[in-house]
Image (cartoon, rainbow, N blue to C red):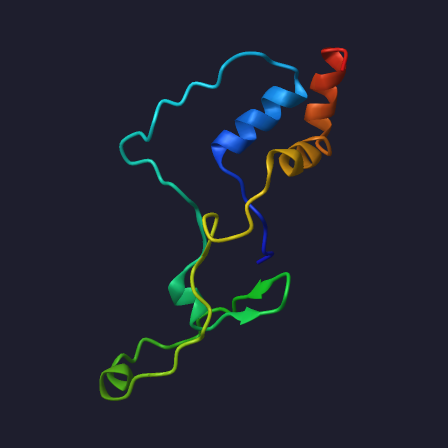
Length: 117
């Protein structure tokens, strides 16, 4: 899994607003019932076996058998030092960085062209 930066919806909205020259206000409506505040990209359980390869995490498949008896008698006390990787604890992009990424997308380029930008 590739490590990737993230941004908040507020930063994304501001970047789109600036790219398209909008003067509209961004209205914050708050958190809706059941809405997640971040996306989990690598769980704590996956971290137990994951390898940090710099720009990537390698997550090997779980090849354990279903003989749980061996886990009741003898467990694994070692813990990988990696912790959950999610969109909240990764590098956060700035508005300018989001604009740079958006400008690489053909859809955004087409839309900007149709706006005469």
